Image 1 (cartoon, each protein chain N blue to C red):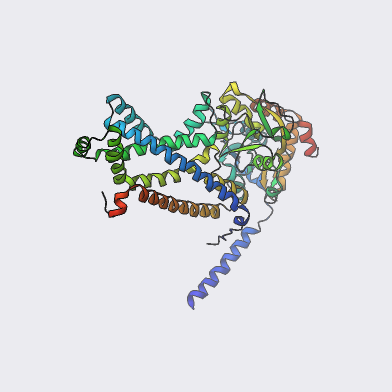
Image 2 (cartoon, rainbow over the protein chains, first blue to last red):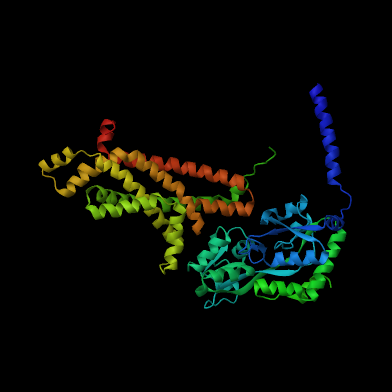
Length: 269
Length: 227
């Protein structure tokens, strides 16, 4: 009887604590960041050219440069919290990072658990191929071998939309890149941002984008109900899209321009 | 433990699993048969061949038995195509698995062949058997009977190891599992299903090896004693 009583009380206490956690006061991370003098940014440093480590083992890439610029403009130190694709959002939810800048595409599912800034870059999925391969539409893939990474959005899109294509599935980007570089496949469906790295593996088999399948928009992730921080970041993105600084960072790492006007329009400016 | 198992995907996806299992069977039966031929020839070369032949087969066995199968498959699939020899993923898998099975079979069969007493060969000579007849009836068949349990185990091991072919886009059983789990997010359930299928395949292969053994070794069938 005593044990049961104790358990009941413990459960009651736990419930009170949990409720307290579930209903925090409207957070002001911006204030916290300024007080601490540093901003913690979660970045995946294993997806070049967005995030990677350079020859001196220092974080580098377009997302890293963006975070550096943001910290400088905010007047605080930058602390990079390295993360992986699946743990980007949990980092934010568990307060291990203040913001996420990590090839984070805006999706309705994610928007349920975190808030997104206005987009700072586009992130298209493409069907790419060797120079000599002629592809104008998905119908041209009929009977051709197309490499994808299993379980990605490109895999799903291609399986649905290019029924005649012979889809060859690899386990990760590296294996798919090797299949292209070694001559096993001439066509692949992947993020446009990966193409330079794949072409670099074997310059004799340089791949170029042929069709854009879908465009995702990359944004900075912040915790829900953090209006001051979100407003500051949105202003910052707008300013730096207009003055061309973000475009310059992107151009430096990716070799292509971001559609600044379209991004500003999406951001409501 | 609040995890709720959900096997609903099976109703819709079982044909995928069946197709994957069928490809696994095709790949591995071909590799086991070819690998057995390669291994038997190499074993004879290792025991009865000249010094060069012995060295070459020895190097082959050591190279294959001391490197991971995954690396061997990558070399066949990516390496050969970089050199201009473009084999499809399925053919690459059979080739790599055959090379692998061949090396292990060489060692197993070598043990069997060496266990044949010199006096047996002398007896065969006295009876006027030709060299080919001696090798087939006096050396190989009894040698194989002695090491048959090891051969059968190696065959089952190869069937299980063939899951590595999923890494070079062969749509066999493990690749099917990876595909279904990435579609349904029921990864735990999918791998449980696939483990059960592999278990069933292992049982099937053991049964197959037993049946082949019964057909092949007339002496054992009659007497039921180990040689």
